[in-house]
Length: 373
Image (tube, rainbow, N blue to C red; front, side):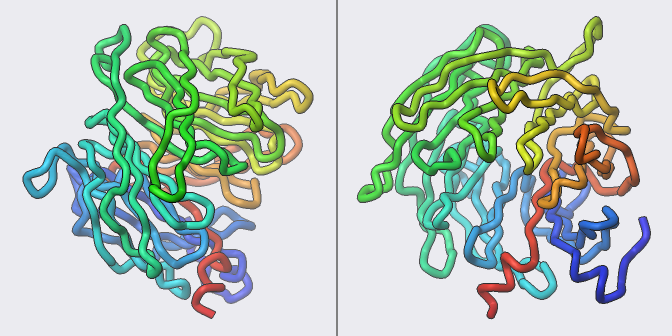
């Protein structure tokens, strides 16, 4: 890729943070500037000293980034960690702040509430979800709430609970959890006074589906769940008032007639809400769908190779013009241009030699700069 150095181009740059497994390299997080008009990447810095930062999230009001450290145990405890970093809004570089136990082994997902007062964590190996309050300065406090899921399902990967996603819905009324191990979506409500999560509803998926990640429509009450183990996406309508989900469609993520081992991973909607994308590991592709605005149902458009192995995570640029796919199994990231009319993808460039990339997060510089003044 070409580097961009002129001032006009840098005005259109945003920060890209790449989380990687650290089995083969000590680099846990790599920082780039991403040019939103051209799709070019410019290297900034990298962070070591954290093991397996497999998921990242950026504070909505403060110049802070939080990462899971996906470990089975830490400091003699059966738990991974959540690590806080300060973000320099002028350079994008990270400085460690503090860490806390995630209260479960192998944390794999975290998110923030919209006001930035607490972090939610899904602990895949421990079968738990937890809530960690944030101090006024953005530091992590010990967990205020930890819930252990119960149950199992039919496949070998489902011999115990495995929460893989936790996040508030766009209306901030419910916390959605996808538990791959028990084939359930669980909706919780927050008790603000005690910072406790109270179960509101459970939704069962077909045995062996393995719900992994959830995407919310930006304007309509549609919810989409990608199922890792049976390579499908399930679409729901969502009643915000009652907090109820109603399934309307299940569609394959694979081309008709394709046979082989496949594990789905990530799912995102375009900012315009017209298109949906999901990643296949095995088929090694991005499945592209058109969303019917009136019904929420999906129509398959195409499957696009990620030009690598095991695309675990991908990200869509805030302006909706580019999609970046991280190939964990081939140590590269490919950038695709999104056709704004059709939603189809066209490959434009490759970033090679980045060890086991598994999480991509973007943040606009202005979102950080307002705090710095």
